[in-house]
Figure (cartoon, rainbow over the protein chains, first blue to last red):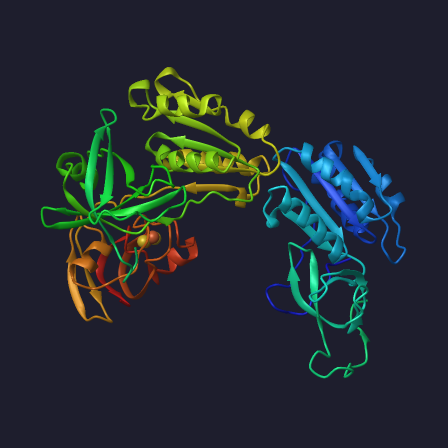
Length: 204
Length: 321
Ligand code: FES
């Protein structure tokens, strides 16, 4: 599979590459859903063979039910951990980052929300944003922050959609916050209350 | 600083011989007012009137960033250079009036780092003196690895060891001591940033070693001021201001432009900041690019020049200035 093509947009909108074997003392992979395929593709490369003994994969099935645990387990890396969700993997991730040394390579693959949250954790650990390799796979559903109530809604497919916290109708912008790891949603009928265009499934 | 920015009129308050090669200078404002607070890693451009030649050399500020009563710099005597450091060593005395630029920081600490790993070579220690004081005051974590030729030339070693104890590691070339860089870089906690200031070779060595060990390029910071090299005299024509003149062997192109009465932008005067970038309208000959700002492709195209450090050989050079 090739990398997802994104429409050209504002510079704030993240763009992603293709995972490739990095040079370093240890390798941490975090993937969800179809992101597992990106990890498998990386390990299919000959140069990645010697990375296995120093690799740790943290995986969670996608919100769409896609679960490729078996494929990842079959890779035979030093550590494999399956978590039911990103939230439940967070304490493990925090521990891994706290114990790590410079030279650790970080890879994130799967949905945008997952990758953004991994990058935010890496940044909080003192790494530059660019230090995390990212490859998009699977769903384009977005993680969106309501700029009014600040609540975050996961897996947003429709635009506009109802904020799951305050209920406002939100237009999903390409404006993205690296710190919050979320796209920004703004009230679409603030000036003409009730004038809400029909929702379309923009993020499949 | 650049065109139009106010300068700081100062008086030399103190000149101290640190060792056989290094002198320290302290400046205070002539009007007795406070100096601007700066961040560790900043430099100022010191203006000198060297017997009719105007020299403007950048020096890192080494005093405590919170010390607004004065600024301190250290100058290493360079016998073969164009004379700026020699002028500072032989002519500058307490009580003399001089002019400084506003402080500019091209080598700041990254506040997001969990730990600052500082690597200094020789006179490259100066920005770290201010940075360490700053990190210490903020309760941050740092470690200094300082390489010098000999104990006699180890400027500020005692002060640093006294102040910061085991966080300071000193290596003497004469005693065949060398930083064990690989071991050092292997054991750094995640979120460490490297800062290196020293000779070209040292910076390249640190950058290459870190890259080979998987350090992100953006976690490795360096600063190297190039002194404008001496060279052959050459002619230059400025299209916008309609002037032509000769750049003398021991004068930089930027200095020659300024001497012709044309205001040109600059910040570092050392080929590092990019501020002086100038479009080349015509180049019949060869530009000697000495900066580390332009990309290799830009350098090869001969359409841009950094007048603070670069020179020209050939028949005609016309700049858009
Ligand atoms: S003044 Fe900084 S590159 Fe020339």
